[in-house]
Image (cartoon, rainbow, N blue to C red; front, side):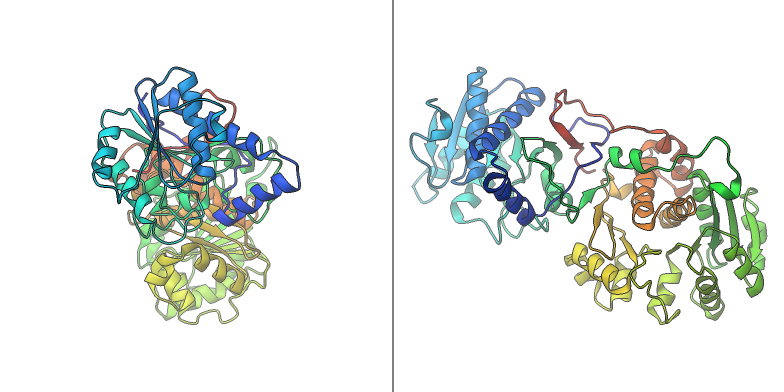
Length: 526
């Protein structure tokens, strides 16, 4: 079976995504405070990786690129297990390791010490890699800072030139396990086997693209108890968090949403309303200008409210359980006033604020816009809108997406859903969720933001707290886009129609790996 043949995401509900520092700190604590033997962790890690290699890429010679640290030890255990099962293996050591390495337990594996300064060393490594079925990358750990040193960089370049499938251990060598940066040479893996949990940097670009298929395996760590770690939005988590509609209920009990939209792009109101209904809202009031009434009639289920009538707009918001503001609103004086009326009328109701409403907020509308830590507001900016809200450049946003989202959430007391690759959800208290949609480019089409806004608003109206509502909306719309199966031909309407099938998914997703220790399995992007 070729690596990367997985077609859908798999993930248990409790999967986390620590930074490199968090993972290292937890590793040390597990050994020093919980009494977990370090050799046991290395044995489990290497053996689980060997089982993944044997299942996905059976047969053929395996070459391991072995560094001097624990990552290299994991690689040697992997090679030792494969050799014991009959695979031909070769260890290429970059750096210093003892000639009779204790992790080999007496197994005499073929070994080559690689020094690029030695004449012919690079050509020799290329010959070793020629014809190999698999390269196991155990050169560097997840905590790398800056560019790899010369020897590691030369080995990385050789691995990338080889025709073999590359399996990286924990993270591709050269990729920062915290921020996903790759400032120098970096391995381009087909599969990354993460120990314990996928590292945050492998879920962020460019690390995500370099990691290929990511498989996380349980290796014997104690319970984590780490609420401050980022959370990937896995199928298992989404299945657990999706609201269940009671058998005996009423449309208002299910959840009423007021969508405050505008006439600048009337289709935006339609998409948001349809998405809200598909995600389970019991009643949607579409508040827009009078001329849009006939267009909004395309959604016969929605109740039209003339947003130019301030009293009617206030009443519509007050009679709803949640409010979604911004789709197609425009940025003129009338739109500004509608935003201010809606936000004033919402009281303690949760709200999602998107699109033109974010531009108005950045320009000073709703001077009191600050949720004082109550996190009753979700903002959903793309990088340009985030730059305007945070008074920085788009480049600064993109250079530190996690930090930007977290700082804005904390400073304004609002849940911040920063769209992009991947989309992130930050809450004022520091919590972070990471979208796992396997092909973000499918969502790069005008109108998908309106679908997302409707989904967030729908979950808010159904009583889901804002942080989780944003995560559920990302998962649901992302899965709907994938299930539509149209790739770059996808339209937002296609995604809306596929929402029911996305919501019907239950459980942890699917994986072709038959091992109970696999907790997370994500296809390569694209």
